[in-house]
Length: 111
Image 1 (spheres, rainbow, N blue to C red):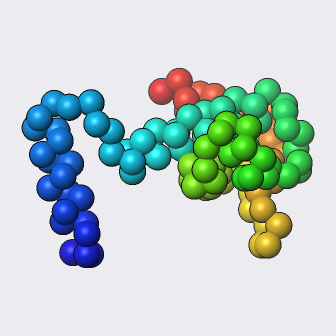
Image 2: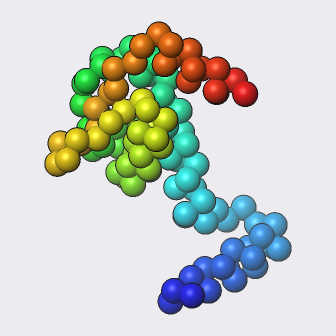
């Protein structure tokens, strides 16, 4: 086990057992990544930003008043979904989607 991971795990168990409202930072980060992914997904499917337009991590993070980590995670998720593609040393860009692609993505979200 990595140094410090064991302490983190026992802290999480102790916190969960005490029913406190203390949130662990890594769990919150995952929630933020989900929120960012949902926001970006909705915008892309709505046509803004336009296909092939660059999505800048720093700009999204600044507008949402969060760090770049959750934005980076969200962009990786959207890349796996086919909504964005990354270019080496250039960043993430909105993918060109056909009507069929959009229908498949929306139907997958409904299930």
